[in-house]
Image (cartoon, rainbow over all chains, first blue to last red; front, side, top):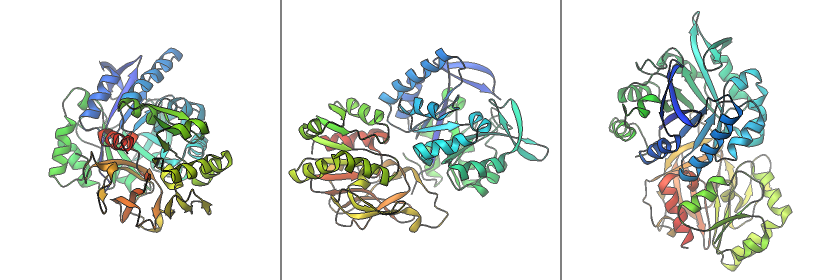
Length: 252
Length: 203
């Protein structure tokens, strides 16, 4: 059977990995290449790199780093951040990325999902959604979680799937950085309508939160987290051993 | 030296890098002479079967690969590259393949209920079938490899060397004489994948 995936996420700015709490107050952590190698050696099933630089120099530095990572690490790499056009897909795929994650770029121009899926295949297009509870429903937020688009997250995910998104990353802004567990309620609502793999993001604080996630929501395919891995609070090897002992199928 | 056939389908960065990683010389090329002179050939590929097959046949590379297969040159097809080794594909119509492996390429959705998501994407464990292939000499049954595909190799019983469970036994790898193929991506399958490429270089 297909295994549940554990995915560390590396936010990269000016060539370094950073991670915020509720998207604010970024703190420098470590070298992207070293962290990537460390994770790969310790059982990460996939890596996500988010480019959070805005400048052209930052962007060039990011693609250099991506090439360096892809030359030494042979697990799937997903890249996100600043993806606004099919040319942006091309730029990161040439550096060894396997999948490209779209967020604000697809909100501004939903046809990007369509165009990229036609050119590179559905499996290449990941729709990343930052969602938050507003007036009893889930709203999609843009610009790194700062701007309420007013769009309903469930409807947006349905539309994204129909346009060719091959995977959904759901990041709950309500639980992100709080370390109290994944947003099972929001994820459950997404799993009900998802026809493609769902990656849970936001809220993991310890090993039990992953066990809880996969037991409560068998349709979730992967768990994604950042700081708890970067700061060594959760060791991926220990996490996968525990999942295995709980009867959850993982790659050991 | 290994020739990685470049026929304009997909990105070969990781494949090329993985050969450097295992210390084997590899060249990405569409030059028939370089492919002919290589010790072994890799046929990569992502995307749709029809387009890729057309590119291979139109460029003459298809005939070259068929000739080299007959001459005994080791050939490894990866992902869509494996599917292209088959006789026919039924992905959006009916398309002719290289015919080096007996069987057809069919949709996974024909075989599984809707609870199985398509594409079959992620890490899945290998189940060896029959005698252990030399391709797997450095790995063990149960080792996980990385898959991304919506179609699979059907009716290839004689050539099947490994399968993966996804509602049914999905063809994971095939081999017929000097021609072999993996549905999964060794270049994205970590150390297990590197060991498979290493074993191919020793065939």
